Image 1: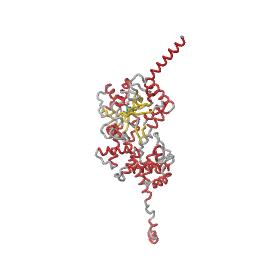
Image 2: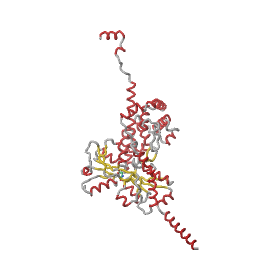
Image 3: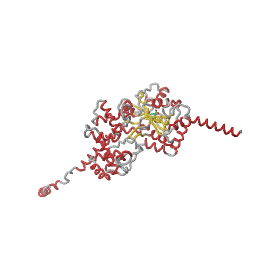
Image 4: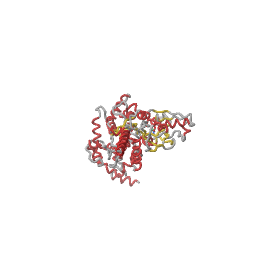
Amino acid sequence: MKRLLLTLTATVALALLGGCEQHDSLARIESRGELIVVSRFSPTTYYQDKSGPTGFEYALAGLLAQELELELTIKPAFSLDGVFEHLQRQEADFAAAGLTLTEKRQATYPHSKGYYRLKPQVVYVAGTYKPRKVEDLVGMSIVVLAGSSHAQTLSALRQEGYPDLQWREISEVDSMELLELVNAGEAELAIIDSNEFDVQQSLYPRLKVAFDLGQEQDMVWYLPPTTDNERLLQRIDQFIARLQSDGTLEKMREEYFGHSQGVSRIGSHTFTRNMHKSLPPYRKLIKQVAAEYQLDWHLLAAIAYQESHWDPQAASPTGVRGMMMLTLPTAREMGVKDRLDPAQSLRGGARYLKNIKRRLPNDIYEPDRTWMALAAYNIGMGHLEDARVITERHGGDPHLWQDVMTHLPLLQKSKHYQNTRHGYARGKEAATYVQNIRHYYSILEWQDIQQNKVLPPLRAQDYLPAALSNLSLRAL
Ligand code: GLU
């Protein structure tokens, strides 16, 4: 009897414990089958490219969702404060948004282990006054993201002996906005994270790091400020520890923040060198495919260079592959079976480009038609359409590449992309993509003109009638 009672008590206790677990955050997530993560649109966290959603945080949260056998839903926030508001309102299970661990934040929000180390950096325009230490910042115009860890650092510095320190807080999600302001001369300095600067710098070759503002910091995931997060937090920390020890995190860091990422703005001399070294084996094939699709082969070659540097084995972390860096769905649609086969890849890319060109409105004429098709090749038709709508709203001509190009970067600003059909896109990168191709295209054409031009006679007498030639020789 006593034994039975004991067993019963134990069972009841277990059931109660189990019952408690049912109500913690991990149990709720598991029963809904969906992991809801708040993030922000930025090249270092979460964004859409032609292969769909991507970014370091997106990939990391995706791995956790996969491990827990859950669907991943990303809720985008439009500012850093917005990220934390989602947590306050418990609208997300955690925030994965390139967030630095700060004292102020950790007083309110539980956080994971650090999964990335970054340095806050002071960025300036090369050739202008370069500050070297905190006291040099006093009197300079500084911009930071509103609600950022950098704003908190500056506040602390102001209290700790630099009362005259001034800065402006910009209410955007992406630090590119800050670089834009510095580049345009509207601010002297921006303070942003090292990983963000590494990824974005290629777009702003004039900008340089002046100095690191303080020590390396941890990037963490923050959880809602509730008391039932313990198991979820444990699970996340185990996950991060495992990715750290098996090398996955290191690999992902390299993939998403390594220097190969971002827009490659290789100088013309590198291009010319590659043109002599890597292009020759593919020149004939590129010419043949271009002829099949009635494209200028210089254009096809320029695209292939921008995409892969004429490397048929090229691959990116977002899953695009081959000489024309096709996504799997595009390759399928274009009938490409093996993306690593240069002939198939070139044909797939050429067909895709032709398709896009055909679908563009009839009243866009050459050469703008080609440049717009290239932009759509890079970010997708929908985003190009949005950029054209924005161009028109701003009084520009949506039929002219020049006008559309200057408005494409607005797809990265929440004020503008919130009113579009397809939302955020890396418009600046698309504009650079097209301009790079145009640049390579012109070098290739120029090179061809050079090679095909009729050379001047080497010796005048070869072209003179024999009698005259003899005469002149004798005269000498
Ligand atoms: N890591 C920063 C933060 O946690 C955001 C990115 C930036 O401002 O560079 O606030």
